[in-house]
Amino acid sequence: MQAALTLLEALYLHGLKQLVLCPGSRSGPLALAAGLLASQAKLQLFTAIDERSAAFLALGMATASGRAVAVVTTSGTAVANLLPAAVEADRSCQPLLLLTADRPARLKNCGANQTVNQESFLLSACRWFGSGSVEGVHTQTNDALSALAVQAWQQAQGADGGAPGPVQLNLPFDEPLHSSLEQQQQVVSGACPPKACAEPSLELSPPPRLNPELPGVVIAGPWRGLTPGLAAYQQAVHRWLSFSGWAVLADPLAALGAECPNRIEHWELQLDGMNLPKDVQVLRLGPLPASRRLETWLQRHRGPQLLITEGDPRPLDPLRCASQWSGGMAAWMAQQSLSDATPKPSVGRNDLTQWIEKQLPLKGAVNEPALAYWLPQLLPERLPVMLAASSPVRDWLTWSGPASSNHRCFSFRGASGIDGTLSLAMGLAANLGPLALVTGDLALLHDSNGWLHASSSAPPPLLVLLIDNSGGGIFQQLPIETPGFERLFAMPQQVDPLALAAAHGVPGRQVACLDDLEQALAWGLSQQRPVLLRLCTDRGRDAALRQQLRAAAQNEGSVH
Image 1: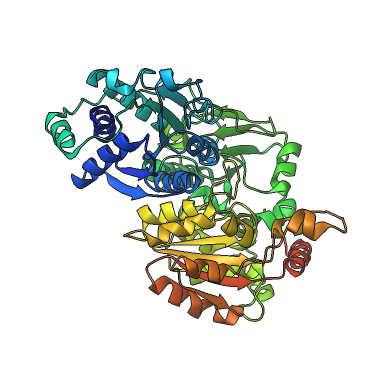
Image 2: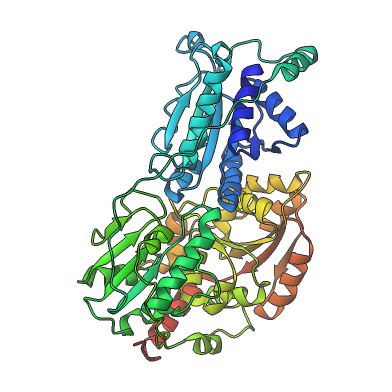
C-alpha cells in the first residue's frame, strides 16, 4: 500500500484529478490508496464493475477536461477489456492512464492463477508502456516510483513531440495484498509527497505557409486537441478566415464555435456545385470529415494542401496529397505575417437551410434527416452533444445546418467504434454537466453496461436520444444486395430498450411523432439524471429519403 500511495500521490501532484476503480484483489493496494486520496479530496473516485465500460467512462471524462483520467484494474482478462478504449484514445489523441495490477515475476509462467501475458495486451495502442519492478513495486524506492508515475503522466499528456494518448503502467504487487487498519494508519503517517517534474518542450521544424491573398478554402475536420487549448485554436481559425476571406467547410465536430466566419452551411450537399478552382489552396485542419464527396473532390484537386494537426505527428492524410505539420493551428498562426493585412468580406454563399426546413417539417412520422435538422434547434443553446460514430454523425454533417454550431459536438471517431458509446457519454456528462447523446439502437445495446453508471451516488445529467431503426441503419445506405440483408448486416434485436433502461432505474419515454419532440426534450432535460427517449424510425424509408433530398439539393444553386 505504501508503494501504491506513493505512485498515486505522484500522479496527483502532477495533475491527476479523477480515477475509475474496478473491483479486484490483486489491485487491492491501489484501491486502498485511491480511497485514501479520495477521502482527502485529492482525487474524485468513480467505481465500475465492467472494465471495458470503465475505460470508456474515463476516456469520456478525459476528453471533457483535456486531462488524463486513471483506470485501475486487477490482473488477467480485466486488462484485455481495456483494449477497445485504448484504441480509441490512441486514434483520438486523448490522454488515458491505465494502471493494471499484476503478479511478480516469480508467479508468472508457472501455472499461478489469473496470470497472463497482460504486458502485451495493449502494446499496439499505447503511447508508452511502463512497469514496476518485476519483483514487486514494494522493492522500489519512493523516488523510483515517483519518477515512473511522472513519466507515465507526461507520456499520456503528450511528451517529446508526441500526441496525447493511452499509457499503461503494469504494477506487480506481491502478497500480502491487504493491509490491516493499523498498517494503513502507519502508511498514512509515513507517506512523503514527491516533487513534480517540468513539462517537456515541443520542438518542430518551421511550418509551411499559405498565401491569404490568393483564393483558398479551409476544411475543418474533427478537432482532436486537448480541451484547454480549444479557445486558442478557435481564435486562430477565426483570424485566418477573417484575413483570408476563405470559405470554411466545417464538420460539426470541428468545434469552431458559433461565431466562426465564412462557414458554408450544408456544404456536403452542394460540394459539386461550388465551382472551386482545381488549383485553389486548401488548409485542412485535423482528420477528414466523414464525406466521400469531399474525398473525391480532394483527390481531383491539383493545388497545394496543408494539413495541420494538434500535436499528432502521425500521418493523417489517407489521400496522400497534403503536406502535414503537427504544431497546431494556434502555433501556425503565430508565425503568419497578418499584422498589416486587411480583413476581407465574407464569401458569398448559398444557404440551403430554408429549403431543407421545407423538406423536413417538424411534424409527422419521425425520420433521421429531420432529427438531425431539428435537434440542434430544439436543444438548449450551448448544450454539448455526443453523436454516435455511425449514422448520427454523418446525418449531422449533412442536415444539421447553422444551429449545430451552437453546440460543442463530440464523436469518438478515432477508431469509429460503437462499443463504448453510452459509457463515453456518461464520462463527458460527468465533467461537462448536462449533455445529450444521439445514438442508434445497436450502439446503445452494445454498451448497455454503461447504464450501470446511472446508479452511482452522483449520476451524470445525460439525455439519451435513441434512434431505434431496428438494426444497423447505416448498412441500409450502402449498395448491398442480398436476400439475407436483415440477418447478415442489419441484425435487428428483440430487446426492449425502455425496459432495459428501467431495469437500471433509468426513466424513459417513447416519442410517437415529430410533433411531440419538443415536449419530450423538455421532460428529459428536466430530469437532471440519465434518461432515455426512444424515437423509432424506418431505416429503409429514411435511406430513400436521403437519396431523394440529395438529388433535389443539386438543383438549389451553387456557391461562388
